[in-house]
Image 1 (tube, rainbow, N blue to C red):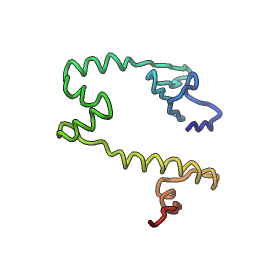
Image 2 (cartoon, one colour; image 1 turned 180 degrees about the vertical axis):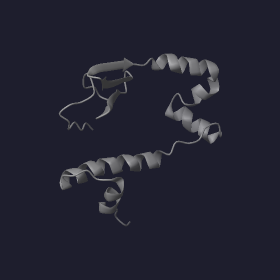
Image 3 (cartoon, rainbow, N blue to C red; image 1 turned 30 degrees about the vertical axis):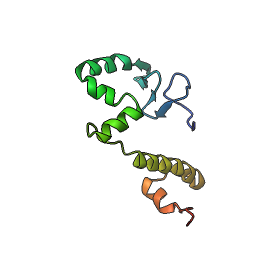
Image 4 (cartoon, helix red, strand yellow; image 1 turned 30 degrees about the horizontal axis):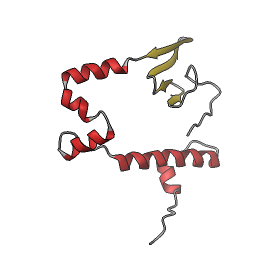
Length: 126
């Protein structure tokens, strides 16, 4: 899903995964941060591979436990890591998406509470 609705955007080019706002922009792959400070555009790149390499050297088991969703699941089953709250993450994603539609419909910014209040369940009893 791409939603681009700004006359100015803090990003040097569009790519598949990015998050942008009035205070800066973040590209996911390759990881970089973009911001304008004192009318100077900054495009800051981070070496995620180097960070992951250092973490792997400091904690080989912990690094391996989060290297894939399957390994994370197995590590959670063994009690080495806490299971990610995937249901909560999915619900928050839907809340954001519904907020975009509600904001467009009302032509104003909306809060998370307003989205929750306006949302109507379409669940079907079986």
